[in-house]
Image 1: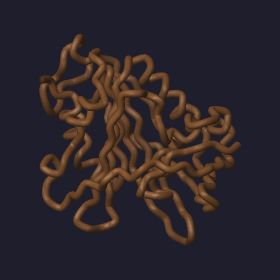
Image 2: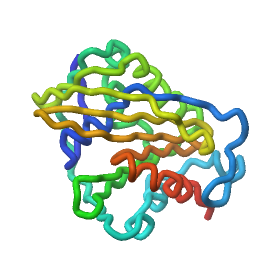
Image 3: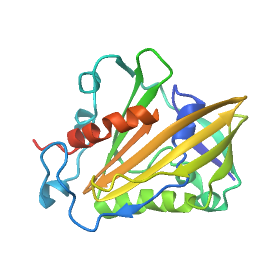
Image 4: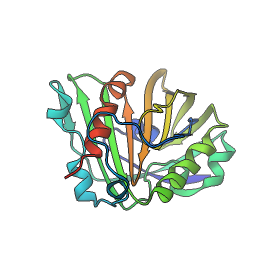
Length: 228
């Protein structure tokens, strides 16, 4: 199966970050517990936000602290991507098979480098009805649970993928997904943590260096949920 995926200046890394692999999907048994920031009530959590509004709720350099520099988003380009060794992923077809361009129209994204190193952290925000967000990303993550390893061929480059389920942060949001991705190409391997949280009509995805994701996840959710 050949599909199209949007890539950015991260090149092959961005394409791989956009390919959800095996993940744990959980649902809270109770209402979301209070965490960093003021909890929103049910009506506020159901409000759909525009892309412009989501942009203002992304983390910025002052939120992250010293050493972080936002990377400009380059013009989108499209590379052919082949997924090998994951029938469940192949059955989804199209952009859904890579998760690279989630089809929710209300969205915003920011990527930062840290201390001039190769460490990066990327934040994505989406807004839609709770059911649409849950069904959209849930179908992708559910399909990947049977594929601990597979291969992606992007732009003629073959990348070996491996994924590991991680405990989801149950105390945050209504639904949580978390995974550790390892991708290897040209004798080099990179490990990326990816955690997604849906809270009401908001979907937050934070990806990048595991330490940076752990450090800033709650802060990102608190700002995304801010009232006023």
